[in-house]
Length: 628
Image (cartoon, rainbow, N blue to C red):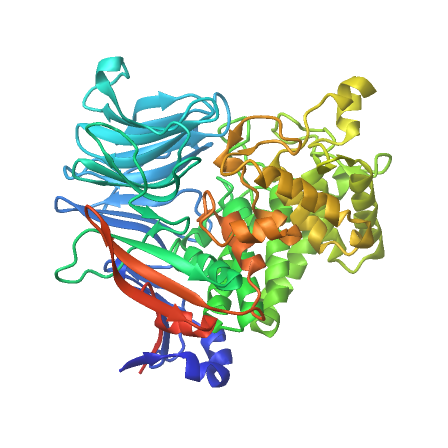
């Protein structure tokens, strides 16, 4: 017998999120995503994904009688990848600084993968069974749309060229003109999600003159017409298979602002990385500091706002596995309370314990535990507090009493070793210090915050600041005039600083909130492709769309934009922004129209919700249930 869990919430909360793995399983609290064949036991954290069980099963796919599984154990740098039970070693010591991206299993059992480097030439590579077939230079974003034995279909995008869809032969190496075919030139349009169907490309994208929505493009002509479904909320969705259903499933939304923000936050968390499968990661690729930290914050924030145990259970799992990935728990070199990374280190065997990564992770754990309140177990709360104190002591030798700022550790195998740390490092660590009971640390956090705010300037569009403190430039021998000519902070790192400032008691009334909001509105005025830098300079790209800590200083324009899928809406800092914006006290009304699209799109189902509880209980995408 399976039934809705909501009537049980008040009486069952404590047992649901604190039961150990050995607890009586007669009453299991489950998250099920039927279209993905995924079930998560929220008491134990275990996933059952297409018949495979584990805490962190990232991928299970089948093709041509072969099965691919990618999974991690707590603290793993990279997933263990197997095909038909045999390990495929796609990452080696010499490639440890690269991030492994999309992974596709072909019908002959071979593997296609994308790999991106954060050091050296910072190139992106396409590999087949570990052999590099294609390489793209820094600045080109590559998405794998389809993979076959003889060719791949790719979306290429950069700040200097319009996006384009290409096919590339891979049955031989090289990238000469004869082996590459351009299928679609998107020109001024910005594609977000693409689906190939026969000789057609379905694209969810925005075009300045044609509008936002779903487009159907012939691969023979590549011509972009008008939207088949005109709506800025149009999104591809996955639904359980049903006899007689044909065409692509596409959802459009309407409703109150807060309801739509809740929808995007919840679907981002529960339908992507379902069951917090990346929480087992070490920070080798930055997955703890730049992915899991934001997801932990988002889950805990939604719990604080709703008191729904699904968010508490997943936040608990995230916190538990993040702590299990620390150096001490994984017997790695470096401070036992830190999370080491490899992507920016110089040598093959070097692991870095950079201050910014530690602060991002530790602050998320602390803030997440605070938002969980009584739902954060005492043991986890205690371990988080010990981690904060340990990190403060670890980086104490790097504090420069004359500058009253932190330096990057002088002995780090890092190209900026010994330099005055960037402002986003300083403010994030100030956030950690402000949580500690020691007066000297709280005073230091206040001083750092004041020095950061004192470095700001402004113009008619609002607040401006730079990535590096002036001390960094002065030590490089730069004059005041040369410092004034340095570029301003980029929007991504600005969001990190703002996230910390929003939590710092010492910022308080000193924060020029209106000026920050004016700057945010200026950035949003550029549309989907926002500028890199705060003053509007630098390349424009969807990757610079404001997210993360910008949500703590939201404007009306920002809130409105976040009632639709923003660029990279499934990114962790975007999900955090949606969760931050959701207000449970606001009116909640949500309508979801599910369309089936062939030559045209027809409404197949319509769902309406008058509360967030109703959406969690009766939506077509996932089930939360208590089975007896």
